[in-house]
Image (tube, rainbow, N blue to C red; front, side):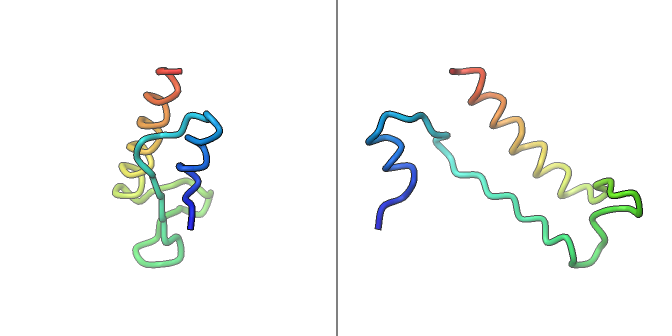
Length: 62
């Protein structure tokens, strides 16, 4: 079985060196969103911030 990263390298497409998976588990307690759809879970916010910062750093290297 071949991972997408290996395929990207083979066809010379850049990929992030670390795989980032963001699992929110939106329907588990405690609530992750308020009634207006805003993300209110602090742990989820920090994980999302980490993923977005890594994507920003990767993009700026291009």
